[in-house]
Length: 434
Image (cartoon, rainbow, N blue to C red; front, side):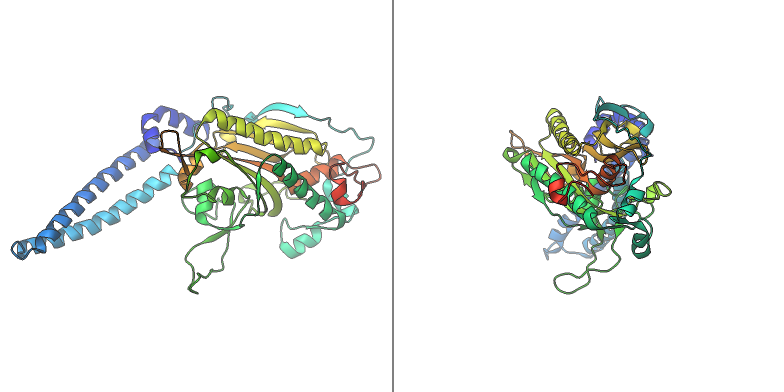
């Protein structure tokens, strides 16, 4: 979220960002609620101070009398009412503040939706086949490395099994990505995939302050957990859709040493997404599924936009290297304002060519959030003056298995239906052909 002082001093700029990002938010209402919250807090503080003064007098036998006792009771009742009203105002304020977007970068294209995203570059040659290419569904079934029918039988809609050399291929992708990340100086993590709500709110995976099953593409665990003392836990738990929330929350409520920044992390995890907002889209195959494996990049940097932008470019360049290592044709897009989530300052997508589907398909996204996430998670560092400042947070998909898996099957297919394994993956698969 943004700093309230910044919002109050830059109302026109924030309103413009709200409009450009297609966010439903009455900023004037937020400012009125913020003012009301401040006034209530001041009155409550004054009442508490008066209560403390009275308490001191009542402890003195020479000053204690019925009038002071009665007045003390009245103040206590007022405080109780003010605390209830103030909590309601705080809840409204928090709900509105959660919707305030980061101001997009100056180079972000302005547009309503994905149709306004701008292609920046392309790499590789789209393959030309002397036969009609198959999609990954037919290829996977014919090679007996993918079973969607039994996946649906066991797991339901969007369920799937990867089998045989398909498993070696998919795990090879993960190992290739991890080796690349470690070589580039990123510390590897296997983070928790079952997390508290704060990690998801803090990273922006809740649209509001609390989980909403109707709009948040997150799975909540229904089973009650137990605390160390054996009592039922009141903490709600959720499955992550990417390692990003777990990695960002690793340093929640901590003050980092500036000398250690930037911190580069990569996380391998299973990922779970309900895909509520994608109902009716890509209903067949692996393109849009409920669970998959992914290697995610996260960088925590000092609060300097120029340095953060360079780090973002470094991150996406690594993803490009991985696609190039796999010899997969792809394009790079800069995401427009209307296609970015509220917290993003600057974003890019990589899309690989998928011959069987005859279109580009997103394989990863690189986002710079500035301090929008770190304010929620309370991650800070000390600058040269010794002052505490929120860090900047960035993330990027190093590699997501399903869509890269699709791209390899469809781009590397041969006329006889077999797959020519990319050279970088052949050692993991154990053969050059599947």
